[in-house]
Image (cartoon, rainbow, N blue to C red; front, side, top):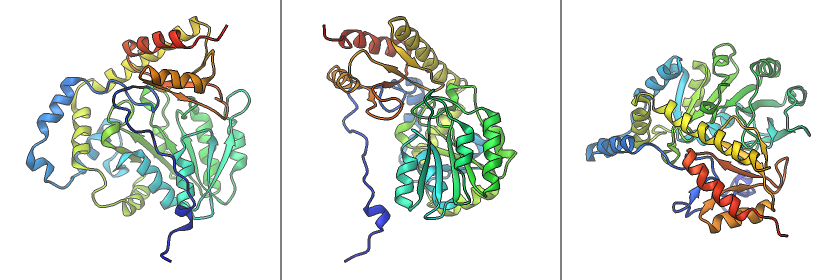
Length: 353
């Protein structure tokens, strides 16, 4: 019998639903409207036969992104989406059988990668007040803890870590020779960022993505930021042509378009604030969020409501377990998109008399 890794063989994967193109997609934290058409036109014009026939050269985008966030280029590597970044970091800095520590709930790919790599996914649950006890996270660390992952803001809860708590946790992790991975996929929708800690501590790695605010989920482009030594180790693992030429070009055009990033973030923040006001004014309980998504408690059963939304060509996320059990999560978009969603909600979320 041919060899198959037990870790991979025994992992059960659930992949995202297909056929989402004709729906209003509010279920996976994408920008439902995407980039402005003029930016898309610029991207189209840059695609030539020679362009497609050329192997990727990532250093130009790496250098631009380094300048964009204010770090040295040798502190950055680019990956095929931040999913790949997480895999590389866990594979590089965690020993099989050792612990990767996260809160729960959080981004599910931490659990999946631990299964695939033979790592122990150790979790600290949110408290009854839907808050993270940073001291509980620190107390959960042992000398078998190789990585502590902070999703900042966290998905699906939407809350951020304070710099004070982050410093406390980073110092505690260092005492166990552990890496702290800060996942900032949603950082452009909040003023909170822990980027500055990368240059203060030698055990911090920060990841970002072009999928959320930059609206490039379809091309798969992620970023890892750390000190040059840790970036060198990650570069040793990644494949030679990690990011494709089209993704690199899209990233450059987004960064080169003046004011685009701020515009994209503001559109979704305005939509978020609008839908939160509408929900609260109509008696819904809303969970606060510093991201491009919000969660609310519907008047009817969440799983049934999600199916009704699908019948109206709108996709949402419903929760069947955890602290958000019985809640609905939607990613935000423009005020126009949020009006469309809310009008449908008012029509279908009606308790039976």
